Amino acid sequence: MRPVQYGSGSVNPKPLHTGLAVVGSGMAGMAAAICAYNRGISFVQVGQASELAFSSGCLDLFSILPGRFPKGFEDPFAGIDVLAKKKPHHPYSRLTHAMIRDAFAEFTGFMGSAGICFHGPEQNGQNSLKNQHIITPAGTLKPTWQVPAAMHAGSLAIARNQRICIVDIKGLKGFGARQMAQTLQPLLSSVTAATIAFPGRETAGDLMCERLAWDLENPKILAQFIGLLKPHAGRVDVLGLPAILGMYRFEKLRRTLEQALKKPVFEIPTLSPSVTGMRMKEAFLGKMTDLGLLHFPVAVSEIFPDKNGFVFFVTQGLQTMEVRADHLVLATGRFMGKGLGVRDEQIKEMLFDLPVAQPETRSGWLRSNFFAPAGHPVNQAGIETDDCFRPLDAAGSVFHPRLYAAGSILAHQDWKREKSGSGIAIASAFKAVSSIAENTPARSG
Figure 1 (cartoon, helix red, strand yellow):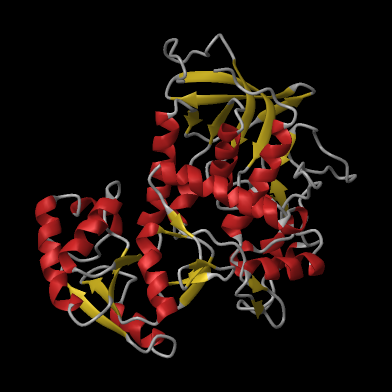
Figure 2: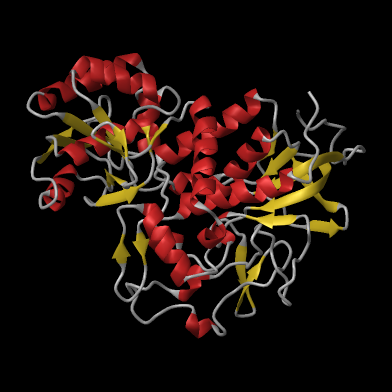
């Protein structure tokens, strides 16, 4: 389905009516769209997926309980239980373990069909409830729940304490193999480092991961790249590379490397903009196109609610279309996604002017210690909801019976410190859309 053009500067005379509008194209927006598709709800999605460029490509669930003395959890579900008791208004307190697992299954199943396959934690070949780990560009181990296939060999190598060689590229900023290996030595004693020059860019400076990913789509350059890696593959069990192994054919390219080197190869996410995040965005949008689903990659500045739903306008080029939606999921994120903004010394929700849970004064947003272990109160600002994730008004009543919210815009969670961003986004979207499905006719055909 595509918007119809009616001439320059015109408004489509026939409004587009849909069961659901998903406003936002980040993780929560993607999850809401996937859940709507799986339930046969007609929907449109609007918003730019720019935040995904900052994603590592992994799906975090939960690993850290912030506080004066932060507590780590290997089992994210055990951590969520403790979190829910300590913070009864946290989004996870409105979700059961089964809901979270089902939400992840739906999301990863859809993304797998789009070419992004995820692996959950494993231990001795069996499913485990423990987080797995990935190597970061800072040379630390980051806990996460699910990793894309391109990183799986690395998580297994960490769990098995295998010999890892991290390979960096001359001129690639923010990724230093030697520094990473030295920092990791206390945790992974058998990790080593190597440096190569990228074929055709030996004298170039400030290389960009996205550009190198495109270069490796060229078979000639790929063959030269393999030749440079071979001397470093002999005495190790697995090779770790910056995430540059192609933008669209990344699984094929990685398998080609592994066959040539006769060793597993894994990618390490790089500093933003991240190729791993871009892949997720491109795979999702490509699948949406293949399925004939409608996505407007534009921002919406105003939405008009009435008793029957919501009305807004989207403009692409010189064409404007009116959209009428029976239900709406607000997945606009916080400050980066522009779901929240600042006006008159207050944090504001930018589309409906919903009340925002926040410190009473701006002076309470931040603690004096930038690295305060409990985090900063501003990072828990957001909108409050009922148990179905419907936003509340200032009196604590449901603002609109057909309006739902999902993801980082929700209050009382600090997803960055908790390592819970993907989990909150995916699971809250799952519950919101599941609630909508109970009151929305399935699409025909």
